[in-house]
Image (cartoon, rainbow, N blue to C red; front, side, top):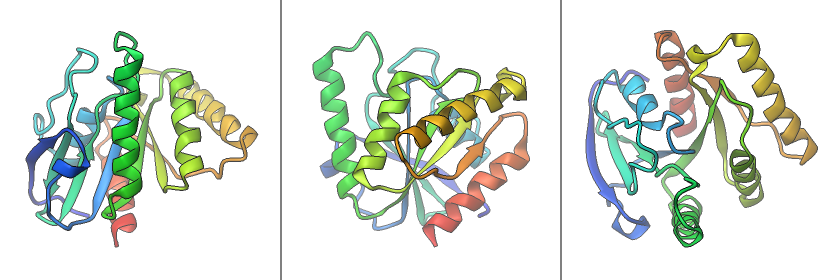
Length: 196
């Protein structure tokens, strides 16, 4: 897929306020500061299409980005930020699950995991929840330029071990780096396969 146009469409608090356009959607989820905004900018060749922030939980709404006028990237708030209370986290989970389970346009869920960290407990909980829900998802390993590939490989093996132990079918793994543009093309190719 070649990105010829991209624009921010709107923000929404939940599924009922999402855009009414009936176009295929790719959801992007992950812990706060895992690199969701960076990935969107990386895929669209736009430095500030999605506003990246070093402040955890900066994104608190679902953000919609229209690609080529016929594809949608749906950016969810980072999950499970420690300073947010249990009620807020539970509300976020309900909103996310309602959207991902009920929105018919969702073609794939990209769950972003930080490549230079071992898999975090909350990430493993989310992987298990997605598997139990029966929805399609893809694991995207981010920030691989911040650690030696040996360390990244070790962290990926830990994720795969968890999936195996819980009898979760191994999804596709995609590796990204803001320093390697070719990898962005592979992610876009994957997205296009999921959509068509």
